[in-house]
Length: 124
Image (cartoon, rainbow, N blue to C red):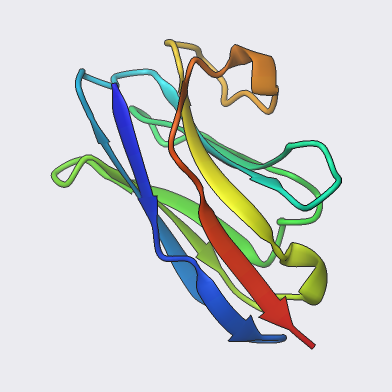
């Protein structure tokens, strides 16, 4: 399994970015695909997750109302649309995949596969 994250960058507060995670190497039916982030000196934290088939989603409280996770089956890609960005959203964002489950997981330890991370910097 390979996960390739992209789309990070520098944006002003209030701006938007869309992250992409291209997944390959297997069929992801019922897998949970997620975005986590890690700021310097902090633990990796959950942002959002989606069940590949069915589309059930889950969001961290910090992401609700601002971020949208989605997937494109034809492109085998998961997206994270981030709107109304804040300086506290600055972090390295990682995409991850967890084996088949019925609801999206927010737990780091349940994710077996990780992408390389993409830096998001929000200036004030």
